[in-house]
Image (cartoon, rainbow, N blue to C red; front, top):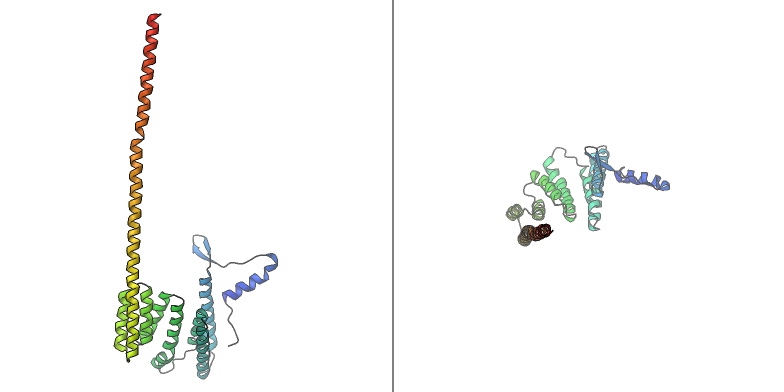
Length: 266
């Protein structure tokens, strides 16, 4: 437990620390094709760090006995619980994922999934929901429900994620399914409250969409009005020019007539 994997963040920190005396700093880049390299975001680096931790955990857990793996899972799971209670949701998620690296399905895979893998995966989902990573949360719920379709917690968690993804019909379908599995009145009341939250969220979403459409409609009207004004100005502008030409032409005619009269007099 004392050993920490060598992550991308640690690598960058180590390099930048050694370059402090020259005032330099290394920034990780990612190739997006056509010779273009963009800066790697903190979120992307965190994802790479998590991958490094999981890989390191899997390698270490693979060397443990079955009893050692049980202890490994319990220790990382408790660490995740402590971090979650402290509000460190990203770190808690890492701890839960490291706990999953110690899984040993043995002869009874379904039992291990139902009693260890799925509960810890739901803990990871709880972290994703706190971090507002709705898509990832829904995907992880899918993993749980594939092996345990009647898992109440995963069904409710997915409904919440789908609500935030504005997939309201699917969210309600999950709650309908969860209601069938509800075994107590308190669970049914919780499901009713969650259903009401979905209704409020959809109502707000519809109002926002309506406001956005009205805003776009008004903007199109204003743009159209400006375009019509420009056409009017464009048509009106030649008139003064034509009037000017007429005045000049009349002046030239008068001048030529005066010159002709002068020649006759001479």
